[in-house]
Length: 494
Figure 1 (cartoon, helix red, strand yellow):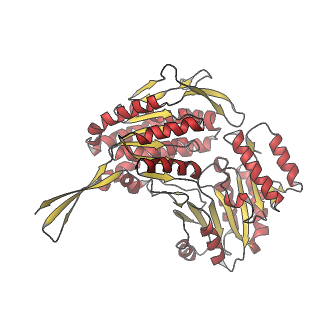
Figure 2 (figure 1 turned 45 degrees about the vertical axis):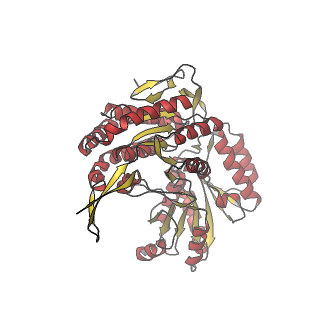
Figure 3 (figure 1 turned 60 degrees about the vertical axis):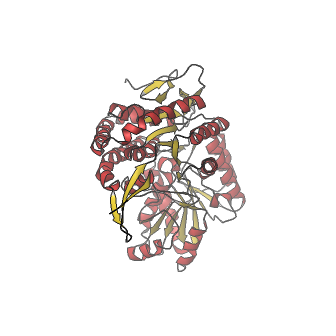
């Protein structure tokens, strides 16, 4: 097919509506999990190319910010129509760059189609001018005004959804964008530039450059983007550790930032939970996309009385929902990090379960997993996990979750355990009494709480974001559009 590429292909920069790969640019390898075989190469962003992209975006801002809402919506609607016809191409990029199954690429595509069409439903109302009257005889005209050039930094794990999320609301609000694409999924996000350009987005409104993979080069790229005087706002989705570093840079230059960061997402079961429903939602919530989702279920707080039967159900349904014996992880280093967490947990008394049940020789299992040359792991869950274990507090970003038992008559204990975690992105509560679950949800410190549903949930019309170490600000719906505007008040005497 025309979109297929061989190993000699190099993902270019997308600047001012054109693909370029400047002479002398550094190229790096993009590999396919779990074998880590070469997929293609990518042209890494440099300070020079980032400044070129910022210039294009800043020169286009004046005209784009004045573009009528109807024209903006038309571009997004056409992009949705085009994207619907590109499922084979999207799946090809997903498989090549992140080793994802078709279910994950289809979910990403359908979500993005909905986001592109749905933003038109709220855009004009969200940005509507308000008029207020003061008691002192003054009238205030309140405008929601686009910032200018917005910097966006997107991750690899849901490259279409999170790539589009970093650019759609800013552009819809009238900003222009320079995005540093995920170095592990540069072609999938480069595709977004091609898509919107084909749909009629003017050159310069969106510029996409693959971020360099080396940490020092990536840090230089981020600082180049943030410190430029034309860049007025930044949005970042990614790990908490990287987000803190970016926040330091943004603070240094006085730039506002919206961030959605990591999670240690909890599924809290009450003693009246439907165990069949709970088991299914735990398995999907923990293992979808190999657990490489910021909202993946990492901890399951289970009443002690329910735990034995729940474990039976988990080992029974896991191979039915996820037939592959192993699931791909993005890199070898990701796998090794998880193996280190498992080793620490086992040494401190944790028990590992696979679809075959409890593993008798824990150390032997970990050694066997380490010997596999592929960056993959089977779906796993752990029992007898305690707070002394690193895995209790650390986001695994892998097909692994931990069961923590609690006294089912003491829900306050479970709420306290949830709120003591560093993160606060997504929590699930399972109960046959939904009114009671909603009441408990009010006590949970989290950006989202889902009743009788897995922790993995997002909707382009809903606000999405975290609290505590999971970030601040909101993407999605009218809230996401407002995030990329500032309030300008114009006053006059009545």
